Length: 396
Ligand SMILES: NC(=O)c1ccc[n+]([C@@H]2O[C@H](COP(=O)([O-])OP(=O)(O)OC[C@H]3O[C@@H](n4cnc5c(N)ncnc54)[C@H](O)[C@@H]3O)[C@@H](O)[C@H]2O)c1
Image (cartoon, rainbow, N blue to C red; front, side, top):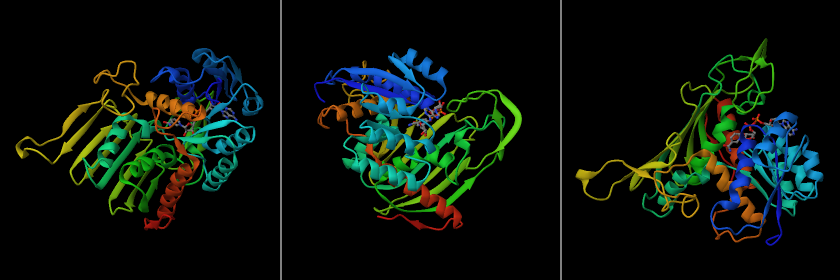
């Protein structure tokens, strides 16, 4: 594949689908020009107007209205699956059967059984299947992980991650697929999948979870009158529908290393539109990341003159992961945000599909096995909640 062109499609033109569409468009211009030509072929969405609009906006040659049309197309090699979680399995398996390389959004599915089946399908497939756990590619988070791995921060002692959002804080906001499904498929699956993945990315493999607690604070929400995309609000009817899953979730983690951690996620945290906050405490210091200030981290190192100790703000630029040699202007202070995570992810996926060595620029995206593990952890949180907060061991 290294010398031929790669045809790309995106299934789902909602909130994250647009981020994937934009990312494939810009990925070739990130870092050195080593990718084969990328053809932006199609954007598919069951709701045709958004497929048409996205294809036009991001420069894709055509639009489609079904995933089957993408699976059947000979001119498409790589497909992002960016639809509601309960639709992932059917679409991903259909695409792998059709010989496509697949990048599936997180969480891998809405049930552990489906996620495991998808991993089996990926194992058997001749093509590449990856999951979009985007935040591992956030430069600040990747840099904190480097500081831990290089022993500058040293062994992690404890970690605290809060992912507060407020897309559902308004009780009049419309119900959507995000509010349907089993216990733990709400805020925990939506943003807790990111938080728990990052907890292990930074502190290593988890051995158990405990203190699972979910809360559904708004039991019914109005039905939308029109199309609802992502977290967006639409006009609503007078009819109400039941919210089935968690608005808020919290739990603790025990890691193999002996470290501990806590995670708290919410979709009703008014005033916090997209607030991922990480604090890591380690043997030689501590570090903080806050998604509302994504182009910097705060770092505290215990070495040096005690009289000058304190948290330092470090603006991220060319010496830091992902920014290095990649961003058009890689000078600290120029800034970047969450959209770039999709760009790094798309670039890494295209490099892998093109057969380029992992060492060329970016580490590979996570495999479906990591997506299954992430869902096992979330399922253990639901089990802990069912048992009144008891410790639940994770299978190794
Ligand atoms: N990595 C991240 O940071 C991130 C951010 C947001 C969402 N996500 C993930 O992306 C996925 C989609 O979330 P979203 O917020 O973009 O959803 P969304 O509701 O905004 O968009 C989903 C789109 O899928 C379309 N659709 C529904 N059924 C379809 C079908 N059978 N075939 C084709 N299109 C279909 C809908 O019309 C809609 O436009 C979810 O898995 C979510 O967890 C990831």
